Each structure stands twice: as C-alpha cells, then as structure tokens.
Image 1 (cartoon, one colour):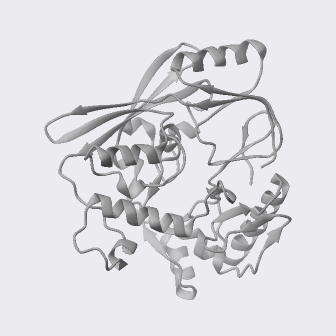
Image 2 (tube, rainbow, N blue to C red):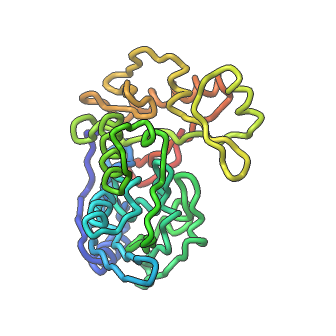
Length: 325
C-alpha cells in the first residue's frame, strides 16, 4: 500500500526498544511495533513511529524427553521452522511458510494443518515498557484461542513481546492432515517431507506478498453453533471442522465461493482466484478499495448465510490500531 510513516526504526535489542518507546512517550508521538507487517492494513499515512522488531536469538535447552527453545520475538517464524529441522528438532514442520515473526505468532496463535502455536508454546515473555521489566506469562494465562490471545486485549499497549518459549517432544509423531494423505509420493513420512509438502501447498494456494500485495487471510473462518451449521450444510457442500466446545468451524473461503463473485474487483482491489479468503492489490489499490471489497463480501455472507465474517487482519489509521468492519 502506498502509505508513509513519520519514521521507521529497526530495533535489535530490548533496551533500544525501551529507549525509543520512552522518546515517543516524552514527545507524545504515536508508535506501533511490527514484526514483518504481514497482517496489517494501513488505512492512511501514519503520523507516528513504526518500530520494526529485529530482536533475534534462539536458545536451546535439552531435557530427557523434550527440547526447550527460548526464541526472541524478532525472529522470522519460517526461519525458526527451518532452523529446527536443520538441528534435527522435529515438530514445527506443519507451520512452515507462515509469514510474520515469532512475537506475532504468539499474538495471533498461528495455526495450520492440524497444529497451533498453543500446542507447542510454554510461555511468552513480555516487557513492561514503563517499568522496563520482563514478565513471563505461562501458556494458560495467554488465553490462546482461534487466531487470538490475551495479547489482543491486554498487554497490547505499553508492553511488547520479547520472547516465546517453545517445547518440542524428542519422540516425534507426525500430525497428519488430509492433503498429506492425498500425496501418493510419500511412502515413509518424515518431518522433512511434511515440511516440503506444506511449503508446496502454501506456494500453490497463496500469493507471494512481494509480488502481489496481500495480508494473507483477510477474514477468520467463522465458528458457529451446531444447529445453524446443520441448516447450512444441508444445502451447501462446505468444509467444516468440529470444535471442542461443540461448535463448528466453517471454511470462510468456501462460503465466499458460494456467493459467486465473478471477477469481483473494486479499483485494483480483488479477490484472489486460487484462495477466496485473500484480498489482493493488483497494482495501485488504496485502503478504501480494499475496505469496500471486504464490506461487499461481509454483506453477501451475512445475507446468504446469516454469518458475520470477522476480519483477521489489523487495521491501522493515522494514530494506531482501530476496530473496523
């Protein structure tokens, strides 16, 4: 998107992050902390400072049956997955090629192909920028749920995630998902093969943001009551997944598909043909065009299925994150 900020600053240490925050506070300048910026839509020029987290480092501790990883939040998530495979630590391969940083992974509780961050997370370290002290939040306190965590409601201002603790079992068990079973080339499954298949699937299905502007899945898959789901599924063939609470998670991409948007485009904002959950910038789309397209999709789904599609991405106006749509 063609937007600007007052300044963009890359930070490599926790102390430099605290120092910049202090200057912003003293000068009353808005700030926002980003990792890779892969899950945000800037609605207009940002009048504050964008702090890019590049606090890196991976510490590994071996115990009898597990590996304990202490990963700093500025590490790229996909780089972490590749690193663990190189080190012979298997268990993160299903989360290959997910964009963003390790800190963002905790905020979003990233998940794909049968695995979520909450399944492997032990703790999240956050720093109070005011007090300049680090607080360790155990997994239970993090309130991880589908694409959400405590970091979206609390610890979202005046705090920053600095590290994530990850636990990997030494005894590896593959997490099987449908697309894996369809791959006939696999005779003996191992972590490397799963990694390669996940990467292949994601590359085929998802556009490269460096070539085609996008923020990944624009909407969350809706989680709805069983009775409501039964009514929809009696009329439409839509992929669904049972949840532990008795609710049903439905494929938002399939719901959008059923609205029959033919070459839907607002200016240079369009729906990605290979994955309807992704909105793309064909060339010079602005935020208004993206939002208009998103609203049309929301209204169609609401009218047709009585389901509200909740945005997955963060919206940022001139002062900071806001709730929209």
